[in-house]
Amino acid sequence: MKFNKEGLIVGFALFALFFGAGNLILPPFLGFLAGSQWYLVALGFVISAVGLPLMGIFAHARLQGSMFSFAEKISPIFSLIFCMFIYIISVALPGPRTAAVTHEIAIAPFFDISPLTTSIIYFLLVFVFVIKRSTVINNIGKFLTPAILMLLLAIIFSGFFTEYKPMATNLTELPILLGFFEGYQTFDAIASLVVGGVIIISVKLKGYDSPVEIHQLITTAAILSGLGLFLVYGGLIFNGAMVNSEFPQDVTRTELLSGISLLNLGSFAQICLAILVALACFTTAVGIVTGTADFMTERIKKPHVYSITVFLACFLGIVIGALSVNAIIEIALPVLLLVYPLTIVLILLNVMPADFRTRSVMMVTVIATALFSLPDALKYVVSEDLFSNIQLYIPLSEYGLGWVIPATLAFFGTYFYEQRFETLKSST
Image (cartoon, rainbow, N blue to C red):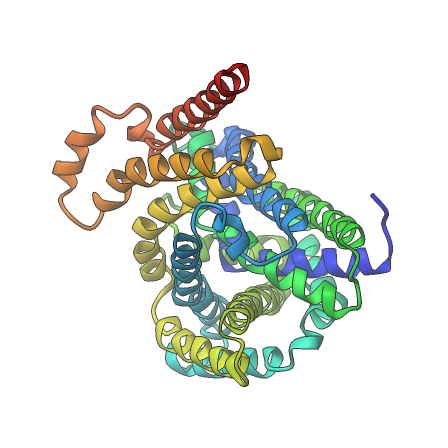
């Protein structure tokens, strides 16, 4: 692994593309709930919000295509449907959520304007930033990420020199699982499929055409961004734990983040936090819109597809971004419980050696994952009692992990069956 200027710029850009609304408001709240067990909740959060996204980027570095490459071996039709579903979710939920968080934390405390007005201005700026494709990654890596990191470090490290009331006991059970599932809400495993494609195209636009060089550059960038995310998440979670005696138990995520900033930075808190939130959310929205437009351009291969997709994604962002943060999070939950297991499985399969990535192994594992993640998702939109009864017969389902054992059994069962079949075939 070789660190150079390009690796640093792309790594900074990747960090900023990952670090958005959920990444900022979720970790402090986890620390607040976990109290003295903050390190356990941090472990769960890092697994799903750092480990899985990193593996997604590593898989992109190997495949060097688009998100379509992740499931193409199973079936081109399935891969296309999966990709379209992911991109629709991305522009309909995490993208607009960045505008909602920006309004609640960065705009509403200073200006008496409606969420819709904020959403319109916000996505107009996203449109202007994204429409010139060749400059997106350089602008993020060189200018926006350093500003985000400086503001984050100011909030985190000032907390180590602030006196608080004694830390209260934890307010939650199973902190590791709480952290793991809260990591779902960052959308970063899904984001790794989206922004990984953005990084691949951007690196090629820089003139890199050797698969070895591309792999090395993207791997370096992924490790740099992962290290940055790990340190920032740990700091934010610890800050949330330190103040869990300072705020009422019913404090919201955004109220807690604002409160921590005020305790740590005093009179400058609101201004620093407003700038940080706006920048962090903006870079994520840029990544989502760019990734969606790149994919549509690759699939349709017609003039103006990129600009039309950017316009439509920004328009959808304006409409949904006018909702509250909590409303968007509630809408997202059942969707995430269905899509996230499939995303995790496809990421894990694509970082494995080629022997484990046969068409049959991937197909059977994905089908098992989809079937056994359905009860977790549908109980939020249909009859909770009906699916709760079904979940009684599925191991780990009460933790939202009903798909894990079936997917594992499907993977190993299919793999060993194929190995046995090949052995018998060669012996005859």
